[in-house]
Length: 132
Image 1 (cartoon, one colour):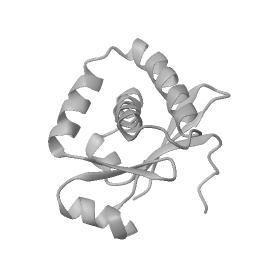
Image 2 (cartoon, helix red, strand yellow):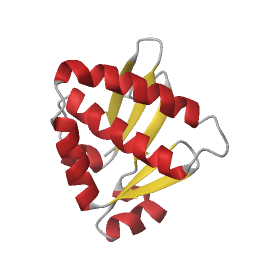
Image 3 (cartoon, one colour):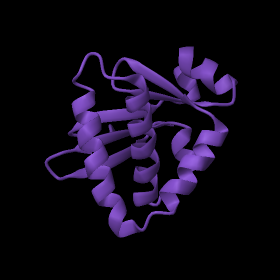
């Protein structure tokens, strides 16, 4: 049975190892690939993952949903701009990824094996889908 279609804006994805190509190359170096929109790929190192995950987990749950909404809104807007700065996209994407995982009580290790995050602006919530 096919998975239900997700409605909203895909903000980012962590392609699984099976995707091959650049995702495989990045994973072979021990890092995690993150596609931000359709044209930006960032690489998270184990140190960046640990730091971002610790930061996300330190934020109280009632605050996380509001933070995700703000970040997702900014990221959605940035993805429509052709010359959006890669550093800004990378920072926003990392924050969105780790806050979403924390908000949904998901395993960071399982999610980083392959996931995507979609922002449903109508319902003002993030959707995390596992890809592997």
